[in-house]
Length: 524
Ligand code: PMP
Image 1 (cartoon, helix red, strand yellow):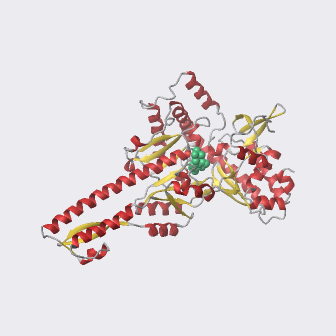
Image 2: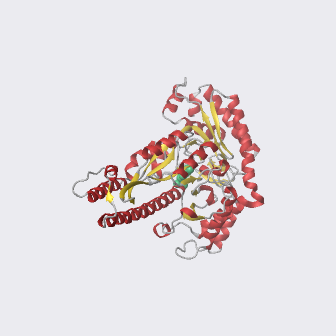
Image 3: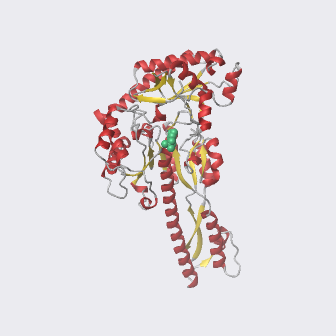
């Protein structure tokens, strides 16, 4: 099934070699709906695609309506790149997104929209915006504190106030010859120390927010993150479903600046909360972490804890959003409200590369528009494709959302039936709508040496994916950071027959694992 090109492999040669060891280095030559085709002796062989572009294909490969729209745009000579001009179509995308989000959240607060080209880029824009907001808030706090210092100096100079021993102690200072100067030096030292600390982020264990310099530090998988730790701000990772741990981490990192006030003729030190954290990023359903669903209870606990310290929540809907779970935003199903949202993948209709970052008005800093941009972002072509996708999602009173929900139930029922027949092989089925995962029991103590070693190396899911492709012409992959979990993210076009085909394929691989037939799994 491989094309035998004579040229040397220069494009990511190591990855290609690795894919070939599990039989996944297939060249696909055509795609439509849920099907990809490769050539075998000049004949097209169909492969049923459950990987779905990792969630980028809510309406399938090369959806005819989207492709026709794209052709019309190109045939019409649309000005793809006209940076620094009016972009009414970008505004239309923003308006459409607001309309949908307002309906789902039951709010009318506008969200401003910043465009990008990829999921990680949208998250990086959110990270940058949240940091700009934090820096501006700190600046304002600094100005207030400086004004108070001047007031205190004046009050001490004209004899209406004196420095108390309590204030000196609070600032870690000793009276010396000039108690006011000693106090001010202590306060300045304390504050400078806090201000010099880099910002921190909060994220969840199992999170995946991208692999760019900033976003990879908020991606929990240490393999992706650790080598680059020195390049960007760090996150504290909160275990899923453990609100008490969230509280503990917030408490542990809490910091205060020291402010000065005059009360009843005495200069006093007053602590002011310092925004240590920049933002809390989270996925309502973790994709790469193994299809882990955040519960409404945990969502509420996060919402409350963040409100208490005025910490913005960035909801990463890059994989879970765009209707896949039966709602436009998976987070709306658990009543979680974000200060920011990020969307990408299916927003491009399977043919454009585009992403958005949304910020609610009460947090929006217009200065951001002057310090953040990208040559390719907000282009005419991808905005019009995004508009088309949003129109298709909303058509017929949101039929696409209902379809995703209904098909998700069918798919879940099939997966649960497989689990019921193979409880020794399948551990759990997770997810919502058309974002589902099947976790295999750990095979690292399996009786077959090949299976055991593959599992120990963390490659079981890839070996299973290779088997499903070879033997059943079904394409799926494990999630990036949980290799025992297979993901299923088909389009809303998935048919009963295609669900059945996946069922047979999974039963096939479950039998192989039950029988510990390592040779068959490995393709020997
Ligand atoms: N966030 C989430 C939740 C994702 O699933 C992904 C991609 N799998 C990203 C961010 C990064 O998106 P991209 O690969 O387009 O940079």
